[in-house]
Length: 163
Image (cartoon, rainbow, N blue to C red; front, side, top):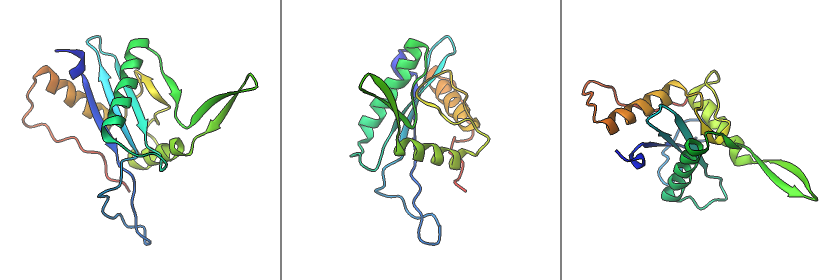
């Protein structure tokens, strides 16, 4: 199979709550991020993240393409890069790091969804990142699908409920 098939996308949904803090319908609300996992025959796994800020005009295909390109970049370079929540700018020959609100909101949402104990994604381009249990199941299910392995009794992979 071509390496194009060796990817799996996951959309991290934005939290929408009412005044009492109860979760409400998310229809029409863009996801907070698109996360794409890619792997190669050597067993390496990469994670690419495309975060959508409130100022962005979210486009599902564009987010998926960015995340896929980032995951493939990690596999190709064998390096992690682009720290989440930080942007580096050049000003007067000195590098200045700026905290990006959308990145921090993504990390808070990730932690709320998967728990404090699970590793936070530190980079938009991650090579062999520490995966949480949900990510491990998602990647393994996708690998099995690409390899043609049928597991009829396998449970469907769903993200843990937000709580």
